[in-house]
Image 1 (cartoon, rainbow, N blue to C red):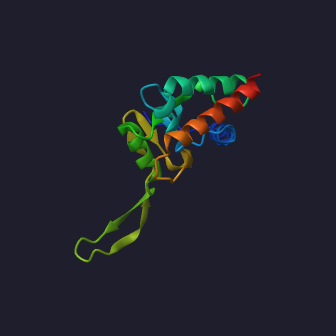
Image 2 (cartoon, helix red, strand yellow):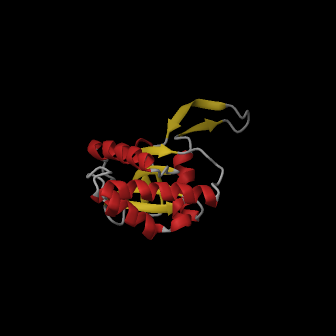
Image 3 (cartoon, rainbow, N blue to C red):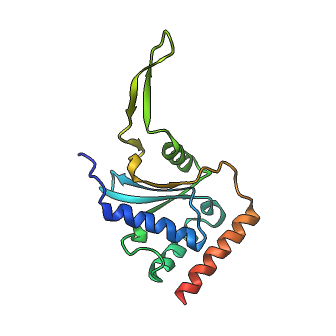
Length: 167
């Protein structure tokens, strides 16, 4: 089965979701759409170090509160969000994929020179997910791990902002 292209309204909603999260205080390491071959539909993948700090349940609860308070776009159902850690193999692999260059060059093995123009990569698969370059919403290029004190302050800010909107 061919992977269906994502609807433009979801790409736009993903960008709005990214901006909403940033405004609330969650700056994702990566946010992108992927096609889940097992489920048969697109999912929004969120890679964050909050995953290790607070866990996926706390993040999910916060995302649902933000959704219910209309702080995030209604097109992004919290059930379609797949959470990953920056520090676990699956999250590291996904970050590696979205940070990559989306083209390859042929190289002459004798001279080590490039042959012809770069060839664009259409998609990459990781497990049950297919990722395409035009589905990537944001990637933070910060290799440094944040300290727990900074994570704690950022998480508290994120929670406080959601609670203010939900009140």
